Image (cartoon, rainbow, N blue to C red):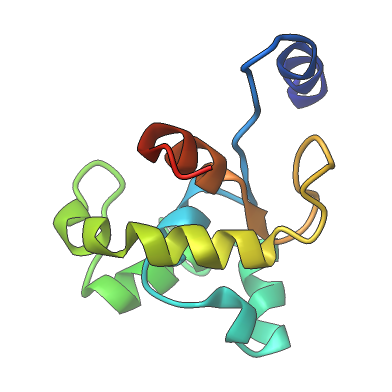
Length: 121
């Protein structure tokens, strides 16, 4: 399905696909830490994003550790918002192949959406 959506976005002017791989939580983590500086093993665990408990994946546990808890429907966005510029810079740094339709490696393209909304591009 992603392939079809990516193709439609590519064909329409002004459309783009802003995905995070492996998950949206990576975008939130980028507000808190430069993932590119983490140990390669930690980056691999984050990319694999396997369950580490019955209700948490690696990325959700990482967020919980950084934020002192994490619930998808109720997380402290006010702690993240001041770091949007940092998240954009960090996401760009992770995006090794920005010309690919979507990242197939540890990366987030949410920076494209934020740059568009903030008129930073």
